Image (tube, rainbow, N blue to C red; front, side, top):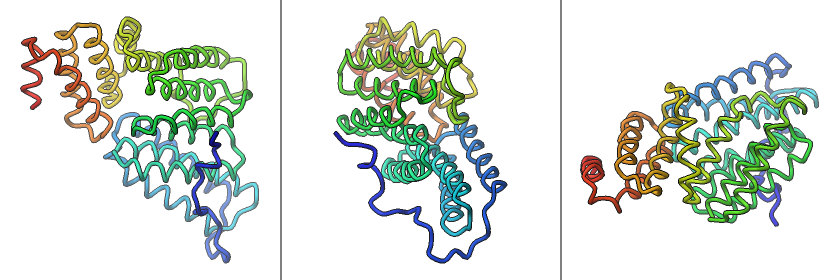
Length: 319
């Protein structure tokens, strides 16, 4: 069974230079980097990967350079590595959304190296889980399951509740992509149980601010959609979408795309076509490969209902 060590970069892009000519790096620089990383996360909530990929990569290159060339104490170095790892996670996510999957994998591996050197298992799990989420979507199903479970294992049972919930959701998704029903449903249940302990355990890292019961509900619905269980998926998605922030255009389009597929599976082609039309409209001005791919999936799924007038009009218009 592969471990996280198998996903570390072959070389060490974070190896400090032999002679450091750069400035002394103190906690002020580390805190400044932390703020910029969080700014990227907040920007990713409302902007797509194609809009953010350049500033994200620029920030990552600068952070790696700061670590390699700057002088710092061992404690300061660990803190800086942690911020590099956090930056790599959001930069990798942005690159993946922009359709640059090879670049994203390299960034995630870089971040995993930083997190391991910083001795931050929760962050390492987040990076590994992010890569594990991407792999099944690229057809690497076995790798996705193995890495998702490795992320959960390295984080350990004492990881913050939100972290365990997120990593268990990634396990559920990886199993769903392979059609493994029971392991996927079991992981969903364990994720809900983990999140229920959030107020009882240690404080979660700031980068998990977005993990809540609503996000788990979305993942549960997506897993049931992938498993072609629309009677479970449709009510969950309709509930989430009834109160979702419309300013998060990309996520709204993605969630609606799963609803369109679930409605198709429920033999509701007219309603599915109505939702699909909204997905296409929302995705038109979003620079996200994920939304573009979801549009293709929805249209393909609706092809079997081409004889239905509403569906035929949608498909002909999209063509």
